[in-house]
Length: 565
Length: 66
Image (cartoon, rainbow over all chains, first blue to last red; front, side):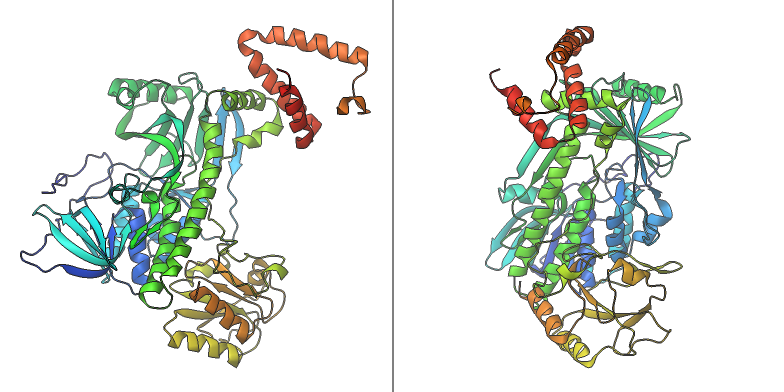
């Protein structure tokens, strides 16, 4: 019998709400569902919301009765916010989160590097925004609860899974005992210690780095802006790195590496932890300032991925698919990209628009992204927590030189999560004009936002299917193009035609909507110099084709390529 | 090796000067900080060299006959 914690988790700032468990009716037949999502963390919930957007029902199992213990993921990137906007929760994060764009590195009390995250007036979201994971989960859960296509089951723990033919049977335990559930597909979103990954005996590949890290959340009143603070080789923790981030509600995250040989249990002893946090606060000039502990935990720096995210009818997403180091905010931020991607691939398969082979593309693209991220994460980790020997020596030499030598300071650059470009994706159209463009997002790249007016941006209008963006100054979209779009729609392909016009305020006939680009900024950001150009965006808004002059046959070819990959 | 043909290579008196001053600097750094000092020096020299390929050749040359 599954017994999830029934008392609210302890927190000095977050009011945990304990939900009633979902209980099976006695003698009920095995229920069948198109998609079962195991895990209700950020990746699982975004998968459910994005699936629903494509008209696909899902059941989401949450083994707990409340949201995550502690703040966990606290920094979300611009691309994550763009994805969260697609599923309808970005505005709540904007309302309550702390946006930021500067990072500072300190060594021996000297400010040795300041990182400035680019912030274009055409971007709706800041490079980064901080909010505790409990709030993020709460907003996502609210959105799920409001969506009739999503059934969230609290207190349901998946204990066993097996595939039989083209279906998955899952055994689920509840506070009233177990039941069976059957689905066409199972999405494993059950986190870094994925029990589904273990049950299928799938090994992760990659690196584990030396050392463990304490992360502690404290409430303290520090008159400092929301910027990332990194302290290298501080006197109280020689050789190691300390990071600090402001979170909403007066909470600060303090991360530091444990001295070699110390166990997590030793490091989390209240007295020892208190002494270290006191020492850190004293070092930054706030000796003796009162503070209160909310939550702490120990992490190890690992950079691992499954080599394939699709195993029969099991689909892996987020931390269940890969485990990434805490430096560089790559965990949840990578999970959102996985989830958004998986959802439209799976929806297209379930709706009969593409064959199951499309799912192999999900795996190919996201495993490729994870490997790129692991490579980047390795570089950060080798600087933040260098292994003994050459890397330690080089890192220490750079710290020492950075006090007087400008040229080494860019090595402090904090590589953060960024969206992967699917440059070699099979979904990219081969016969387009990608190579003839001199600017704008290339095939495979994520979209580039455009400010259209006050509180009005391009990405506010996109998503939920394919987007064809057609640049024209004529009063109507050419008939043959409209014909291709209509035929695709008749086959059930979700596609919207957005016209971008530089003249007048009249809607372009044949387009689903018209965006006015009087000053040419949209065309400039998309490298368009003449009317007749177009971009085709996938349902995750990545570019899959672009043309200097679009015609009906090339649009047909691009759609065919996308749906037959 | 390139040293023979490099027009910017050190004259013998200059090389002797580098020899002495490097030895003295290593002693000033002290045994405990010798490695750190030499790595800093290598990075400064690599930056002044402005040629990552040539630096890699130097790494190979220095690794020889250890």
